[in-house]
Amino acid sequence: MISVTDALATILEATPVLDAERVALLDAAGRVAAEAVASTRWVPAADNSAMDGIAVRGADVAQAPARLRLIGSAPAGSLLGGRVEAGTAAKIFTGSVIPDGADTVVRVEDIEEADGAVVVKVAVKPGSNVRLRGEDVVPGTVVVAPGTVLGPADLGVLASLGRATTTVRRRARVAIVSTGAELVEIDETPGPAQVVNSNAYGLAAAVRAAGADAIGLPIVRDRFEDIRARFEEAAQADVVLSTGGVSVGEFDFVRDALDALGVERRFWKVAQKPGKPLTFGTLGRRLFFGLPGNPVSALVCFAVYVRPALRKLAGHAAIHHPVVSARLVAPVRKAANLTEFVRVHLARADGGWTASAFAAQGSGVLTSLAGGAGLLVGPADASVLDAGAVYPVIVLDDTTLATAAPAFSN
Ligand code: AMP
Ligand code: MG
Image 1 (cartoon, protein in one colour):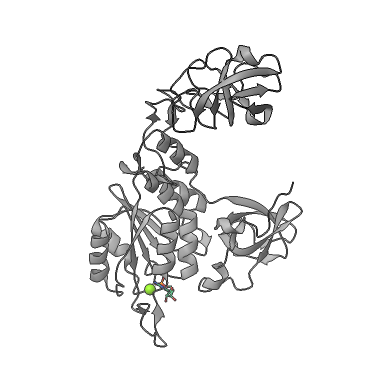
Image 2 (image 1 turned 135 degrees about the vertical axis):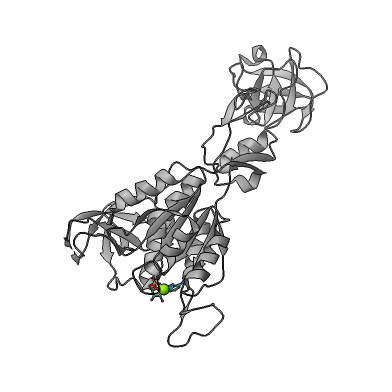
């Protein structure tokens, strides 16, 4: 049996980063750039106006009032035909290219217009209100470094450079193998000895939320040969997640089936609750997680071990769920010598957090993990977690940190 820390380190050490693929720009959102992107363009492409107003020569407006003759108008998207000479001005709008001869823009609020002429009412510093060519990007500027998680602004910058596609780390393909003679599909009505295959849904949702693609496979019964064959099929994927059959029961064939496939077992059993029978192995670059069948155990093991691995495969550096420190509201008894992931409800208090444990901590009680629960990490050496003490809590879902009312005011 190994510790949580060692199990996680073993998994991440064995986890590669996937190769790159070229995708349409919008499909790159939230993914990790595989290559540096350097601009071949100037942004903006020409000096242009930051304001609605008139384009003038700076020397003409250094003193006020100044009377200038209007020679034309350059709406955004067009170029003025003529040239702004001394004593003249051209109407200009936000984003309009500064006409030849001009170097300064006077805001519309600072002028008065009368029969073909304008009067500039205030002195304006030369160069005012002009956005210079290349002030955002010049040719050669690296706008995206490899490893960048591409957000809305990155996509906007890439779009401004005309990049309709970009290279990102491939999404991991994750096969889900559900084992159990008691399992039935979602559209069947379970008999008293049967259970709907809920893990396939919970895990597929978790896989998607981690930015990977889930491949659901049909239920497999607790027979060694069937499980081996299903794993062989699943091994096409980058990652195989199985649930159930990984403990010490007479019908638990997952480890034997993985052995038979040639999967190199890296560990079996972690000093934790829930999820003690977790097993992990590799076959070449592919990862095999034998998750326990209990729905809570499966999802807790996913959050702690599988999600970081999927994020690493996809090229992310920040691969773990966020953790907050929270003050425990009431004491919790825990198993000695096991790290315990206690399902808690988080609440804001005095700029920090409090955690209250759900009453039902059984690994079959999936509702205790629903609706934005956190996982309080109870240290292995403790047998009771004290009220008032502060513990790390894994935040499983960022809606936990979201607020209904604005969390700021002005
Ligand atoms: P096992 O790990 O196979 O011993 O299963 C432990 C518990 O989890 C049993 O109560 C199973 O019925 C339940 N279980 C196993 N697989 C699933 C599944 N795919 N969906 C829901 N419950 C499951
Ligand atoms: Mg089973």
